[in-house]
Image (tube, rainbow, N blue to C red; front, side, top):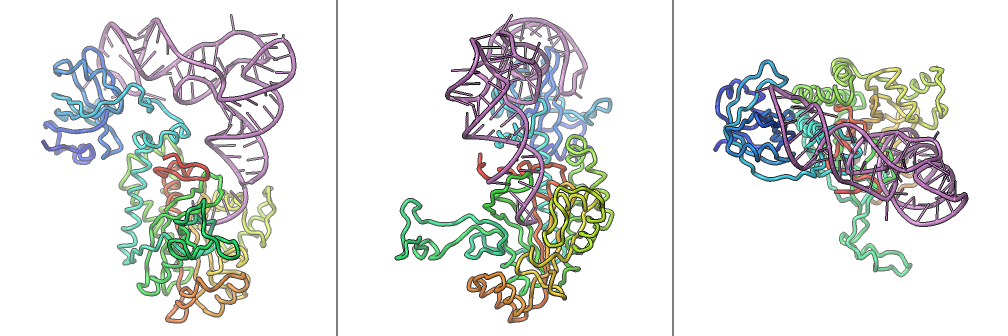
Length: 463
RNA sequence: GCCUCAGUAGCUCAAUGGUAGAGCAACCGGCUGUUAACCGGUAGGUUGUAGGUUCGAGCCCUGCCUGAGGCGCCA
């Protein structure tokens, strides 16, 4: 028995019209009377359901009319057009077989649920319309990212997940250890003796694969990572998670300008790809999540991102006349409210803010002439905030060592990172894209917990 | 970590300090080319939790738990 997928019915309808087909799926909703019944069946391959029509000619008509939601069935029937109805076609069933039963207390009702409630049932929410759309878009976007870099001849590199170095001071780290926490070995000084730990030293989950990506950029020219990342920060916001995915490209022989061009091309490519591949999902988001989504994304895909230096941005904010909760100063960096004003009110589209003060940025960012700022940029996006963090890396050995010493860093764990500068360490640049934030931007979903299959945040790991 | 708000039926929400209700879902029945179907009926509650104030607390006060929003950190 050949099983037809619902996606095929929608995408290649003419091949199946007026023919007998067999489909398998789950009952999303069912309406029935003593004369006729309708099932909306979803088989997971497509956002939309197929309407199944059945009548008392079915041997098991009475049984079928009472099926609870989420019952799995196999349906044999004829596909016919329904030009007068909401759906383009329907399946007139000649046989319906129950494959797996469900129950009356199925928690997903045929009504709208709140996102908070759906979060409580993370094992069932992918079956809802919204999350069906979210996770299909997530998959399509991930594929688009690989496609983009593959077409540009980037090497896909797998940076380590377990690390011994606090990669960039990017955040608090989760410790990895096999020591017995209730009975740790001690040094003569009364500290934990990590030489007896699994790796013979202190180790953590990586907060970034960037430093290792630089190794590969200086061997393969253009590379990217796309992997999970872990931050043990006590962040309580709608856009932070303890486990999330980052894309971290690294480009050799490239300065900050090259970097920004690549970022903009990537974002637009993914955006275009998702809009082309997921029209049904995007229409759903546009109607039920964010009425302005389609227009905004089209606008972004077809216009240049804004560009402004940090110093200019501070001037714009000071001259705006807008009352901010926090005053704008060059030294203290931009507050969220300042960033939002720039992207949402001034530019109304994604904007690169470049050349930040060195004191509020990481040690590895290349010092600008003048010595006050670094060749770094944040891509600020309306509704999301910082979507991408990028910089040209400090390739000058002496300048880098000076900077690390200024920051009183222990150079030992970075011996290999410094050595990269000694042997053909050309100028290079890279960036980090928060994958979930990109998905939030694409879908209009405003909480990061709703674009991750099983979200992990402070004090919260349900499934 | 800080600030604010919320928690009442399975879900979404009402209820002036004075007898806890509705819609949807579920269950029973009816009816219909329906599409968040429709109509009638039934059942469903220690009001998050532990105390306190009061003749009387869902409502006022305190602690705790859970969730949401904002801020900081950042992707």
